[in-house]
Length: 54
Image 1: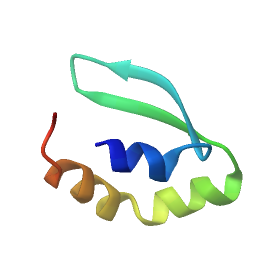
Image 2 (image 1 turned 135 degrees about the horizontal axis):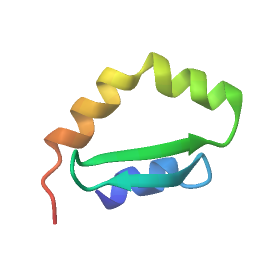
Image 3 (image 1 turned 135 degrees about the vertical axis):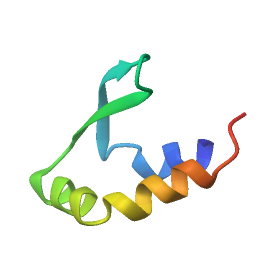
Image 4 (image 1 turned 30 degrees about the vertical axis):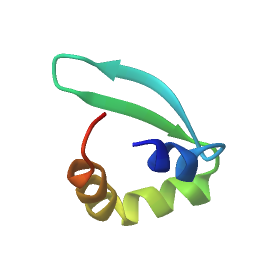
């Protein structure tokens, strides 16, 4: 997961974590990056879910 944090550093801000659903809410730094996250949401989710937790 550390690699994912490095990829997102300065690009998103954590706004909330819902422990019940395991949902992490992020605020993109720019509208352009928000668009990029939206377009690649499935790939990002798959990458995070395939990474072993530490």
